[in-house]
Image (tube, rainbow, N blue to C red; front, side, top):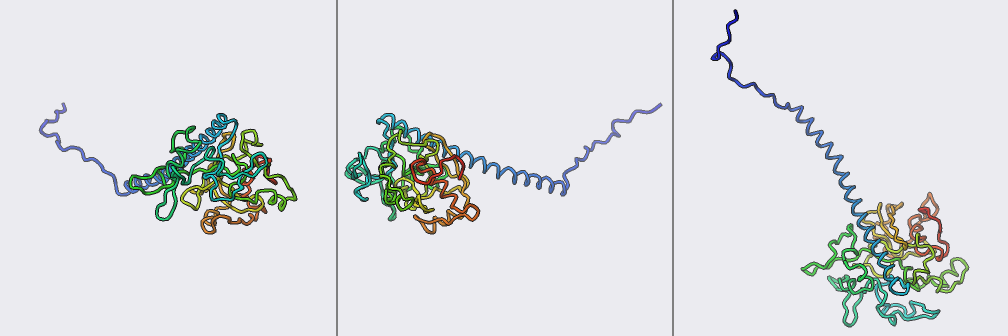
Length: 329
């Protein structure tokens, strides 16, 4: 008969727990590193996509506000100008076939009152540079239809937040510009968009009034005509409307290329779009040569593809030689 083990003879030592070996720890760390390497870029892309969505939302709201303004003002669209032309050529607008000084038109329709006048300070000078003040936006014709200065700033804007800091340090408070051919009777900066310009280009002599786009009904192709675009002007604020030359690949202005694969814009019908630069050297060339840089043709296309994309969206069915289809080119 088997004698039961006496309790005093039983071992009281706890069993030894086996720890991780050095090799196992290295493997675990390596796996964690791989996971982090996969997740971090994904998080960055998700955040970038969220900024794009917000930027497009801002521009859609601005475009819809332009339409709301037009509905309340006998179809008159907001002008893309940011000043009333006090220091510009005196014949900057045409009404009923006559040249009219823009300063005689008052401040009724301007996108931003980015100028100084009696009783109004739309610009401040800091370290020799002029910046828009909040008053330039909050007293503009469009602001009552938006009611939030934050809508004017892109989440990709390097100078966020959209305000003058308490210390008085200036920041740019507006990332977006209107298409220079939107809401105007004449191009605000380029007088060579008139009849002599088109005569030189295509043997045509249309009256300058053909470019008038002051009312909703004058937009020939709302689904393709650009209304807003994110801009990075060489000045400390986005001065006047956004425009490129129509007869040559000259960048009078250029889109903000904070993210060259996602340049945002909106169309006159309220739709939004993003564009990825084909020539990724363009931002460097814009910085180097500034306004008026002429882009060489792309070897594969025989034309400056990036310039053509934006030129064709200035005023299709009106601007000579524009492409009227809906392809990216």
